[in-house]
Image (cartoon, rainbow, N blue to C red; front, side, top):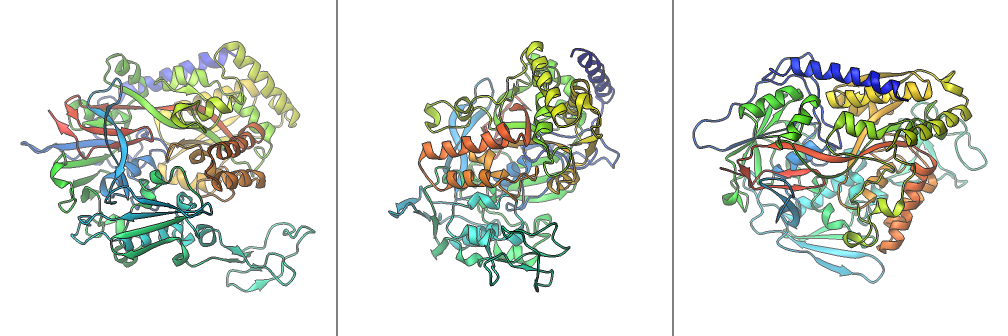
Length: 633
């Protein structure tokens, strides 16, 4: 098993040499990159180089940060990436928000942990137990909550926003974030329309009822004809359990006492947007500074696409007088060498990515900081297509991954080899005071911490592949590993390619795509194996598990299993911690322990570099950095 390591070391050395040659770059090139679920940037591609917004002269404090390249979306309902979420946390504000906890992040300078505090809400909401398992939250909106055009924020704005999020036509990947709200299921999932025999009715593209041959269980025989689909009756969005008795009162009815609901109220998808603004130009309102009306501490003042987004204080924000920078500039870059060069020159005060070959020296100098990050880096298999429609093949590919080598020799920033999907640090039934979900759930395979363990894993992998009909990889088709353009993801992909080829005798090609194209390809399931990563949206295992619900917006693996869906339903139908966790452990047992739909590689850490003269930045291990109150000097 060591020959591939020697070969891979040569490959990585080549990458590092290229990095050194490109190290003099001072401007970014390319388009979009970072992961939907973790911040990274991409290697240079052939395109015009965007300009770097110059640091202003004089006493003006421009906090210039680079999170990634052009964001996928800055519509709160449509964004599904961490970089976009960070921007949205500055431009918009929910009922709750992330504020300063006053507690320093260990081993950092100028960085405190963020804490959940009231945002547009005037205080903590009134919570009513309705006696039947349901609960009602009543929020009072601040009297001084204002939009960036000076109009007041109303409870009706939240009603519109949450109804829009639940509506299927919005096509929000994160619509399920409010699935605990009364009426959501009927609005978003709908109710099947049955025929006279009690079977599902089907319609064509024009809505006309068509006859479909059904088996004894009432399921279609074979593939449905093109354009034919199940007839579903979707409830009107107005039936969602949200209301505004007056302009300053927002009421939410929940079907159960959701333990993480307050964190949902600080999640970008639930941030208010203005109905008059959105409906006037639904597809483009976010791309024009004149229509990008927001209610957060900052407002957009300029967007030079593929170059930078500039934010200035929202003068109507209730706490505008206490904000720190005069300007926050989100530089849109994907060239890691350019990021580091601009940080070195002082044109950037904060970066999250840098060339892989620079990491050891940056760690040694203590310039590069490593903090907690609740997430998992993994590969997803297209489980609906051969050869990865066989769980034995998926398990074989997962066991053949030497995650110890990847975290120690490739990523090199303290990541931990994964032995499950839900990462360490996510609460179990006892919350912060007990064992976490990963400890309680245990390991699904033994982490390859020694060559002997890795060889044992590979022996099992080879037997699984043989049982699936591919002894020593014979007859196995050439498959492609898809990743978004990035030196870091490329290095991981090359490592995986060599591991699979050496351990299993299979051929895996590598293909990279620009970020937005990659997201669409993966979402449509047009791949065999794809790079993936997921960061917790809130500290609860359901954040990692409900995304694999059949037809879920973020279900890129195309995974579907009725028993799995039922376990997720049980977890969401009760507030009892023990019952919830039991159901979620059962769900993870199915998707990982039985079906091996995913190949977890490592649990994340967050790396960043920040100008040591900067202070007053907040951070949550969900991946959000809050720069609005930063101070310099």
